Image (cartoon, rainbow, N blue to C red):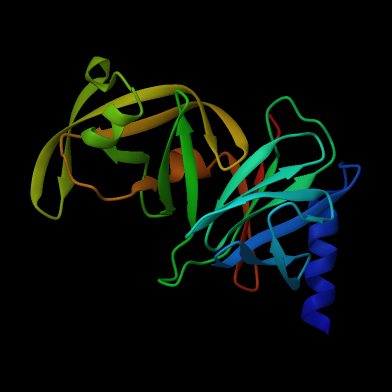
Length: 216
């Protein structure tokens, strides 16, 4: 009971500036239905149903698309959540709520130049980091960046440091983020390192990671 009360208070502080908000996390999918955690309670919902300020638009094998009352749509991967607010914000939402994957990692979508890659939170990484293969898929002109050398598990390889004018992590928009691109065709996930994470206040509430965008 105490843990539930503390969680409710924390979320109230995070969304105090919003007209109304709901914390929604995708837990599992089952055909045309999905299990969500909504404000701490598990709910089984199907396409077209509305819960709080969000409507279920579509459900896939490992994701679901929901839409808030402002018409903003968001694709949630398994274990991913966010705070759906009725308040209109020009730079997207200001908070992101993540649940751990089955492997214990925190995952979030990274969108650049209208393209999206799956990323993993890595507080041990200095920069937002990805392979050149992923950067090509995101239409990033990384070869115009600063040449560098990076240490990997397979040895030292060439890399480039570039600045991304605008990106989205989940539904939160960020500007002027340093990105390290390694010269590799590996299919490893994008690493969401500290050049991105230092734009947020990071909090843990039980197994949730709550990222709240800093005000500058």
